[in-house]
Length: 296
Ligand SMILES: O=C(O)CCC(=O)C(=O)O
Ligand SMILES: [Fe+2]
Image (cartoon, rainbow, N blue to C red; front, side, top):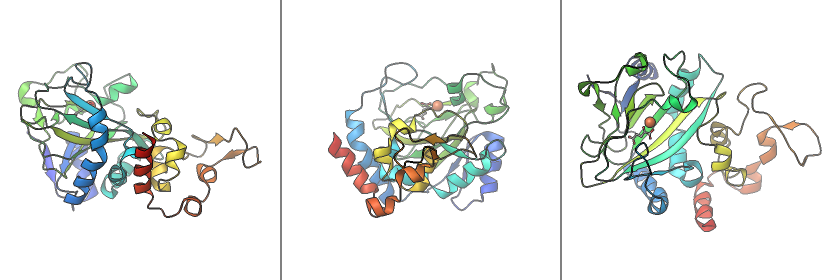
């Protein structure tokens, strides 16, 4: 047993097949050196300031940085990665008209950290297994090489189909070992957790999670990336974050100040207006990052 590795040019069907079977799959080498460098640079100022976790679950030697859509232009690109979005679309399609970004978190595990408590991420919504439908698809982008020694995510392939109370035996636990620039995809029902870091270097991963567009998101995107920042993002990314309707009448809003003088529900695009005209080029992600550093 182990976690299957697929190449970047694997078909979406093949990726989905492994996800259905094991609830976890690695796609090797999707990011280039430049992208990895950008992510490290984007995240560094936040990682330096962030405090370690404060309990067994979040880890006493592990740092977590959220709001990645507001903080990192390169993480925005990861969120919109075409392979991941094609997989997400088909993964959620049987149960939802659409999907959205559920939460974002850079997780940096320092040397000396112990194993995280194994868990199923879907626990965040309460309720539980047996799964009727999968409500989460997650990606872990390896920014450092992930090894068993430095805290590669522990995973129990196939545990998304287990009875609720079955506990994994030691030999059923695998590790999402992968080269930096690779991505590990897993679902909300699979047992997993951060690994112990017994090396002398940190292990950094960017976690981007997706969920059906009708579910409450774990990370409140409208507060983590409020309209004054979101206005500079692409419509595609804003839509992924939930600045859009999730169905015909799902997630509509009314402008409380009636700025358009219409006293009716308006679409987010109407609220933001033609942002290209207002805010210049689409490529305003760099501006976003520099603006957000100015705010500090
Ligand atoms: O850091 C990891 O590898 C896993 C973290 C995780 O599963 C979590 O915090 O929910
Ligand atoms: Fe988790």
